[in-house]
Image (cartoon, rainbow, N blue to C red; front, side, top):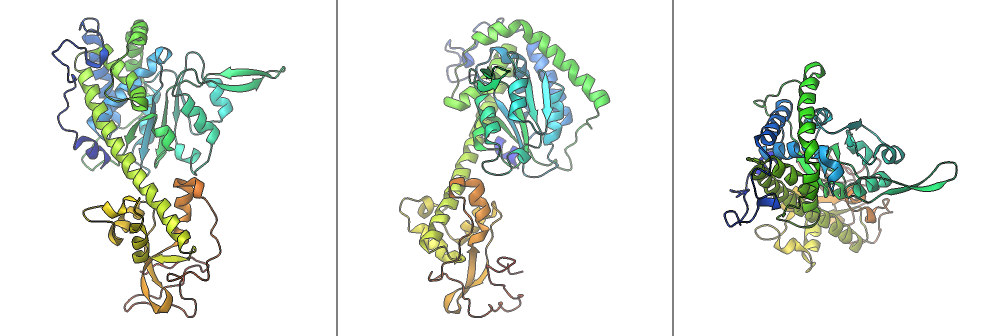
Amino acid sequence: MAGTAQQEGTGPVDARGPDHGTGSRPHGGPADPAERGSGEGAELLDELRAAIGKYVVLPSDEALTAVTLWVAATHIQTVLQHAPRLAVVGPTKGCGKSRVLDVLHETVHQPIMTVNMSTAVLCRVIGKNPRTILVDEADAIFSKAGDNEELRGLLNAGHQRNRPAWRISGPEHKPTPYPTFAMAALASIGDLPDTITDRAVVLRMQKRKPGEKVTPFRSRYATPELNAVRDKLAVWLGPRHGTAGRMAPTMPVEDRAADTWEPLVIIADLAGGHWPARACAAFAAMTRFEAAQDEQTNLKTRLLRDIHRVFEAHGNPEALSALDLVTALLQDPDAPWAEHGANRLNAYHLGRMLRDFDIRPANYRFDKGRQAKGYARNRFLDSWARHCPDLTETAPAPAHNATPARLAQSKPPVAPAGQPPIGPPGGPAGPKHAR
């Protein structure tokens, strides 16, 4: 479970930082506890955190802390330099993604809820006092590689201040800059484009376990309760905009991860109490988890690209045996496959990695009557299009001189004992898997 993975391996985190007790300030916040906010801020964030956790089960305690701080940060957007995205992703429906957006809608600053939004609308709803964009069903917007590139570009640009979108407007066709800076939450089945998640606090949702209970979300009583917390949050943060705008927390990482988490750390420092420690623990656990996810994703993408290269080297046959495919992958001295796992990549590891792309081996008959587990080339086309768009192509005519992996065409294949017949790949229905 994603939430468990985020918690495991984190280890004890000294949220006060390595210089605690030496006179330095945690996160770069005010040195005087009185400057960092009275107990009012910490109590208010506690109340918000409890209200969010009442209606949704998030993947970890750190994730609940991050969402709480993200909601509070929407109320100081006008003084922030970066507008972190909140990516609410899950592997299937029923993981609570839409419910998270329901709760956010009642607690964030001036929300706009949508399941689809044109770039023209997005350019016009964001102003100098930016609203908070909530996008449900985002997987439908970015369903294929290359879909809605203009909208994706606007969402990416809006992560940082002073990245306007220029449009021609008015009867005089005057070039006009439109602000893009605004915090946004996007819910999706499956991962969002990596350029969006790279700018996001990522919640990897899972279905609730049988013992995990939440209060049913009913607008007639949930909305007033959440709105009351939202209004108190806005009142508390209102006079602190100037202080927040001057804060420059010292972040333990650099570049985009620091830009994304800085607003959350600012909120925690403003609140004081135990919240700076909580923010640091959430930051450490969730960024470490996402770094591991990125490493696995990059490795699997490398595998898809290398398999594409192997098929090309063999003349793009209709299928390759698992043994031939693994052997070819291991022959590349610059690839990581010779050091993969305890020994090196084998057919079992290959199957496990390709399973995430819904690519599975089947029994095929190759030349000289040799029958073996193998992979049909047309099974990779969709994954190549989604994860390696520069390799996107239509299935070419099979090479007739490819050896040794060309499928035998002379007679129908014979099924192994006790199994139904195995159909030849490339037929009307594609490769037939052995049942």
